[in-house]
Image (tube, rainbow, N blue to C red; front, top):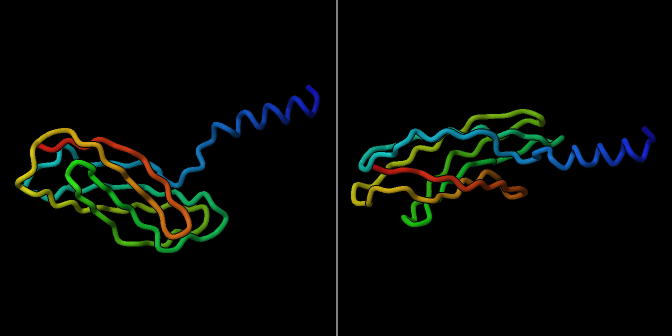
Length: 119
């Protein structure tokens, strides 16, 4: 293989690498009305610099509910786990709701859409 072929192959493989900071998330489901649920989010810092004041937000669109974690600093090439405590109002209807999970600070953000089930 010549150098150009190797370079093109390298670019192709790199295009599938996930550079996002959001790692894995776990939401204790189903969420129960009138109780406090917990979500755990692993955040990876793939950058070569430290990140300051990184927090996680979960916004449930149809309900207008927003939950925010405490801000943390993440060292370069490290990861942390953040917790979201989510008190569920008693008066909401049971169902499956689309929510936006956002991780970031003033300099970068990463979002992912998830579904949450409330009973």
